[in-house]
Amino acid sequence: MAKLTLRVDFGPGQAVGPGKIRLLEAIRDSGSISRGGRALGMSYRRAWMLIDSLNGTFRRKVVTAQPGGERGGGARVTPFGLELIARYRAIEQRSHKAAARDLAALRRALRR
Image (cartoon, rainbow, N blue to C red):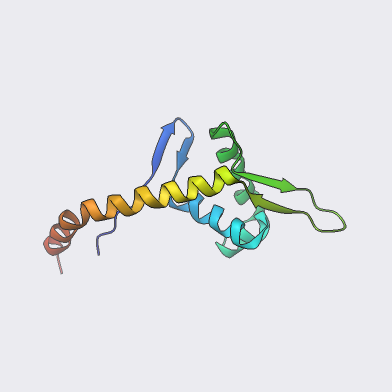
């Protein structure tokens, strides 16, 4: 199987790839960094570090968090974070379409 994986590098330590986008989607769906991370099999610390990295990469935050407490806190993917997801998925979709023929040729060339 040949699969195209897309990662957008902006500079040293500044990148967006499938893992960070899946995490953003999980946070969007769960309303929580810890639940989003758990859904992907990662610790809260790892999820928080990835979100902190994204928030530090862009001028606008991608996730805002409410500290825990009586109501348990939570997190929200910002409008810019939703735009980031949509733009990444659009780039990914166009890239897959553009590479389909070449990937098929490489797939046929694989040793059985």
